[in-house]
Image (cartoon, rainbow over all chains, first blue to last red; front, top):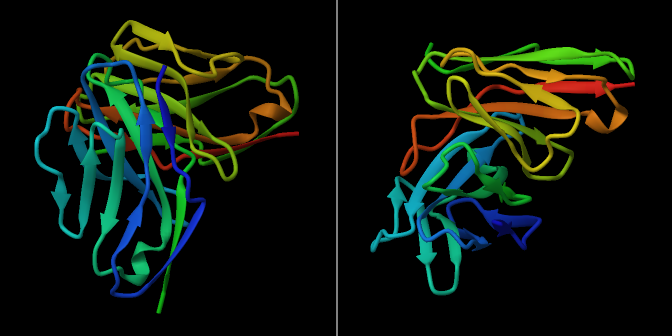
Length: 115
Length: 113
């Protein structure tokens, strides 16, 4: 069974500062992917960034980076230079490479960016 | 625009009624999934499909049926609606494993009274 834990229900960050959203996971699958999704107040789900379990380097996508520590089973999302439009719910998810239809999501972190 | 289309966007059902939530994608994705999102919570997997004709249960399948007769369509059927099924339902598709994240539909907000 897979499990995703996001321990921060809510986070605040000042505009233009960096913020880290925590995610830990548990799985028995040897090969998997870790994902972060953004859900603005409008409700849609947006794919942000991916990290493979065998990737040696941390993933980056623009202002988003994923701090992957495999031994600690953590996959934290770092948002640099926060913008007001980054205010949203953020979900960490994991998916085994043996089944791309079956992701497990955390309960999410609500990020509020203050002007 | 290419993507995942869900209909309807909103629906109110009476307890015991049945209905089908529609989901269609035009990206030729093999993998499709249905999730429900309850207030303040993450997404829980209801059913998923790894290709036309192949479906399987997720974490919370009771009260729901699916079928996948074509690559494009993956409808979700509520057999006899219950208030506990009040939720937001998302359909998602993916090209495959690896770096391919989900593309989500816009969601269906379902209320069962």
